[in-house]
Length: 174
Figure 1 (tube, rainbow, N blue to C red):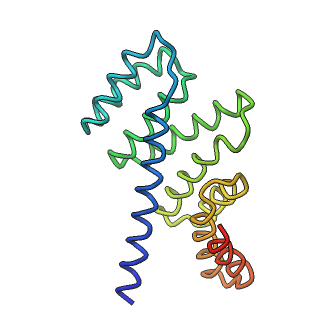
Figure 2 (figure 1 turned 45 degrees about the vertical axis):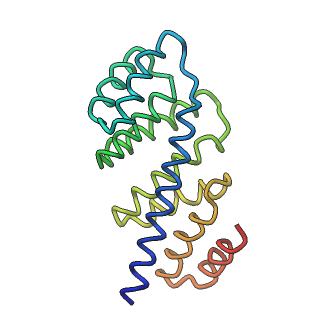
């Protein structure tokens, strides 16, 4: 049983690393208005140097000047995540979702943030709230296999066998 636990932990770590790299890659191609490029670049450099506190300080000041630049908020969330500040990560993703909703962006664009919120809720052992976020991400085609995995585990734990089978089949078909 211990080997299975280590394997599951290994898979979860690999998945989180993949997500992190995808988000980081997105940051490299981010578009920031010219007047804020220097400050944003400084925050990226601090982030890449693993000086997450400095990155956050720069980003918080930049957010005051330009609160509707999604890239600033995304890097803020990543910096907070690196500092293991889940409450700040949660608040930042909520801001991004609110901003994108206000801008009438398609739901598919904020599915990754719901996925991340699902991971936070999972860590807090709040399965019902986590499931809500994973269902949103799944509905919008984001990280389908991983969403099916978590939703399948939750269904299995609650005894909803048919639903768990559906989600476990979804892992294979994703």
